[in-house]
Length: 138
Image 1: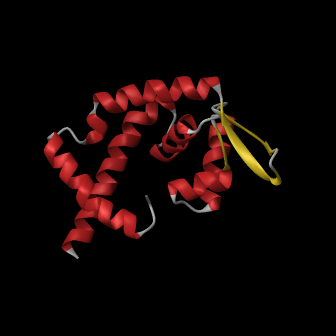
Image 2: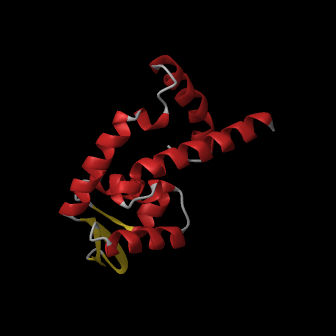
Image 3: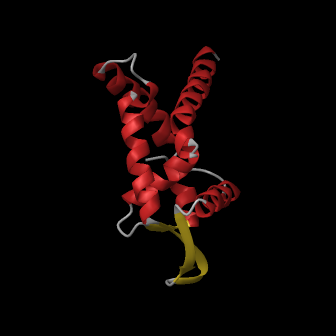
């Protein structure tokens, strides 16, 4: 119980700090993650279903996230030419620019983890990796 409570509280603290850093860009960390995921794709676009799988979020959450990003002209939706029923999210040039600037700010703040050294961060990653692999996250 102590470990779970500590992880959950750390998540809340980090999310709050990251959201505060992203606020000037009118982004939340969830929207930032979606934009980053699109920048990492070969074509700058992914099916909404793939975004949900990779971020491990419910389809409704993906739809809401993409809706907000589309209203801000950071992504655009289009029909998937390989699947007539599917929808792709494409990152726009404005989205690429914004994610680049936001990433610079997050990196300058060490993503809220300035109190840890490299060895501690590596150890933390290794410890949490076991949980993530067990959940199919890798």
